[in-house]
Image: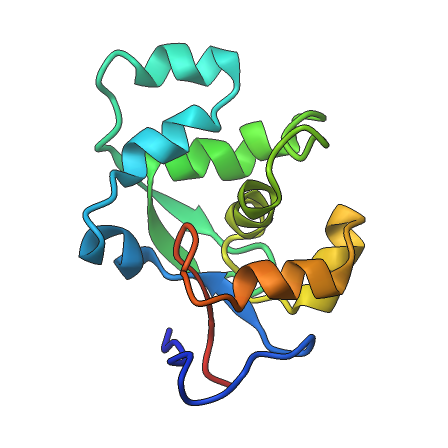
Length: 143
């Protein structure tokens, strides 16, 4: 996926965003630690024992495309993200947005679509995603 540079265009409520996984390595971020923090208690125990490097096949339910994903990511998508408290109101907005993308297989969404899923104002979501700083690799995608 190609990402827009913030200097080329100002994102709008109709700009699609998703997680730029390369951002994590380019910014020396530990992807596994962050993902592990979002696991349900059952899977936190399993992955705390050093099982975080496993890769598994994941089938996108919308496109039937098979993708290789990290085992933690697979468990988050197929189990933890389906738990009632995965998108609970006590979680910071940027983390909620990240969790939406993680749970939907990183399908790009606009701030308007994110607003519908999270019950938060679209303008607030846009301001978080379009600021000068990139949070959690959440970036606009090229159309």
